[in-house]
Image 1: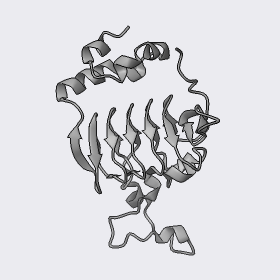
Image 2 (image 1 turned 45 degrees about the vertical axis):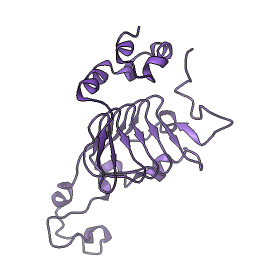
Image 3 (image 1 turned 180 degrees about the vertical axis):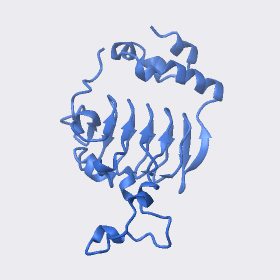
Amino acid sequence: MTGPNPNIKHPMAPAHRRVGFLRPLLEGAENIEVGDFTYYDDPNGPENFRERCVLYHYPFVGDRLVIGRFCALAEGVSFIMNGANHAMSGFSTFPFNIFGHGWEDGFDPATWAAENRGDTIVGHDVWIGTQAMIMPGVIIGSGAIIASRAVVVSDVAPYTIVGGNPAKPIRRRFSDAVIERLLAIAWWDWPVDKISRNLDAIRGADLDLLEAAE
């Protein structure tokens, strides 16, 4: 077994063109990085992921969306980028300056830059449910699960399930000791041939077997 080609945009075509590997689909997208085998599932097709799902993404802002390998993104997920932020240090949050005609005079760009929360980062092997929303600057740890329609406003620890608005931890998937060992194994970084040889261990629940994989 060699596994699917991560460079194929529609790995399940022709039967299921709604599923697409994002890395080849986003080739050339500025400030967006996606690892191999991460996919987006949308009945309208995954080709417009950037336009539909990465919102307020203005390259001049400089923030990045980084998604790891082997992530599963369901229909309607959205990543709100820092371009959505308004200056909040004054009495009004209305962006007078963007409309010009004199309203830009006296605007201090530093008041807007102060609201930049940095890059949005999703680890490896993360499952994000339907219509979940990830806010700017959030870091989601590897192995996490984001429930459908969750609004994630703060960082999510590895192998943690979160849900709700704002999203709160529901439970850890495994004990702290097991999570530490899983992160050390980092199977998602293995060569594809090693992953293919050890699929039973990866999708199973025998940690000793996974650690012994060759």
